Image (cartoon, rainbow over all chains, first blue to last red; front, side, top):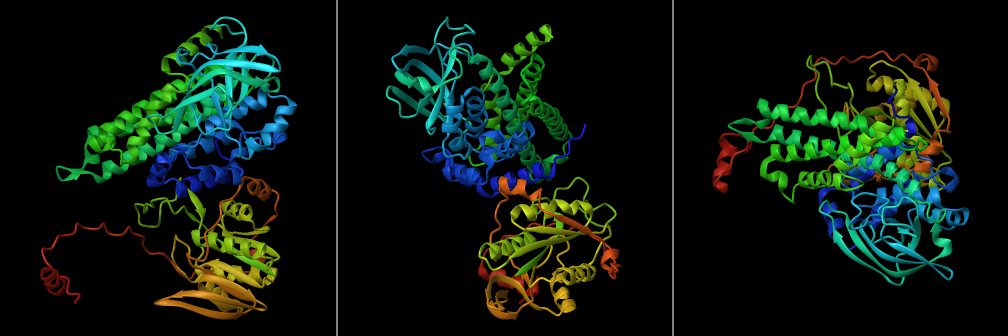
Length: 380
Length: 249
C-alpha cells in the first residue's frame, strides 16, 4: 500500500501544522479556554480565510471535496494543538448531515456560509438517557400549521452555545427506541422556547444541554424525508468517528513526545530517569499502542467516505475501540511516567490526558463499539 | 519587473537534528524537510511586491534533488507564478550554487533577485554575496525593509548597532533578514492552484556549469552539552570569579 501523501496533502498538512503551532501555544489556549466563547473566534475565522473550513465539503457545494485522508491530516494537527474550535462537530459532522439530507434550497441557503466558516453549526443528537444510541430519541416533533413544534431535552451539545444554527433530532412518530420516525430539524439558535445550560467539558471545549419547549420550526427547516433521518445520522457519525480518531492521534503523538522529553530531562539518583529499563518498557508500550492506533485511524479515514455498508461500520467501530483504548493507555502511562507534574494544570500533558480520556465518552464508548463490532461480525 | 527568488530545501526548523554516528553529517533519514525560513521570507517579499503592482512575475528557483519540487510547489502556493528546479543530487557548496543561480539569472534576466540571507542547515551566508559578485549586480544584504523607487531600490539593512539604508541600482540582489516580513500561510485555494503552475526542470550540465565542490566537510559534531551553572552569593564574588576563574575581565 502506498501511504505517501500527495503534494497538495503535504501542503495542507504543513499549513495547518504551522497555523496551529503559531496560534495555539499553551498560554494562548488557556486564554481561549477562559474566553466567553471557550475557543478562539479569530482562529476560526482564519481557518475560514485559508479555505480550511471548506475541506470536508463537496466541490459542487463550494468546498474542496476533501477525502477522509484530507480530514485526517487536518484533524491530526488540530488534535496536536488541543484546539478548542468545534471543527469536527460543525464542519465534518453537522456539515456532512446538511450535505447528505438537505434539499437544493437548503444547500443554496446554508452551505455557502457554512463552508466559509461564517455560520457555525452544532449537533444536538444525544439525550440524557440515550447512552450513545442514535435511535433513542425522546424529543418529540408535532406537526402544526406551517411547520413543527419541538419539545424535549438534548444533552452535551458541543459548541451549542456559540452555533448560529442547531441540527436537532426529534421523533415525529413511534416509541422511544424505534428506528423509524426520527427526523432532523434546523433550529435557529435564537428560536423562541429554546434555552440552554452551558458548561465546560473536562477536556476543555464548552458544551450545553438544550431545553426545547414547543420550539417552532418551519417546514422548510426539516432535513430530508420526515422520519427517515436515522441512516444518515449513522453514516455521518461514522465520518465523525474517523475524524475523531485522527484528532486522537495528534494528541497521542504530542503526549508521547512530551513524555519522552521528560524522561530524558528529569534526573533521579544522579541520572535521567529514561535510563531506567522499567520506564523504557513503558515508553515503548506507549509507542506500540500509538502505532496500532495510527494504523486504525488511517483505515478509518480510508473507509469514512465509502458507501454505507456493514463492513464500513465494522471497521469504524473497530477503529474507535482501538484508538480509544490506546488513548486511555497513553494518557494514563504518561501521567505515571511524569509523576505529579503530569496532573498539573500549568503543564500541557495534563490537558492532553484529559482530552484522551474524554474521547471514549463521545460518539460511543468502548462497550458500545465492541458490541457493535460483535454484532456486525455475526452478520458478516 | 521580473523577480527571481531562490529557495532551499532544508530540515524543518522544528526538528531536533542528530549527527550521524560516523560524524559525516546530519542524519536526514525520515526527517521532515521544509523550505528554509529565510527563503520563505524572500518568497513573501516577492509576492508582496507583485501584489503592490511593482513586480510583474515572480519566478522561484531551487537547486537540489528532485524532492525539492515540494518546496517549489509550496512557493507557488504562496503566490509565485512559475518555478525552475536545477536538479542535482550532489552536495553543492555555496559557490557552485551561486554559479548555477548566475546561469539561471542569465536565462531569466530578472530585475531583482531575492534570497534568504542564509540557510539554516549550513549557515554559510555567502550565496547571495557570491551571486552578486558573479553577476555584477548591486547587493543589499540582511534586508529588513525593501522599497522600489523608480529604477532604484532602497534597502534597509540590519547591521551591528543599528540600521543602514542603501540605494541600489537595478538589477539588484537582496538577501532577507528575519524581520523583513512575516510569511503568510498557503491557503487551500492557492494550494490547489499551485498544482497547475509551470515547473521546469534543468540540469547543471544543461546550463553549462560545473558544480564540482571546492570544499570538503571533514567532520560534523553536535555542540557540547551545557554544563550546570553555579550560584554566587554576591556581586563581589561574581567579579572575583570572572577575574580569576573565567579570566574574562
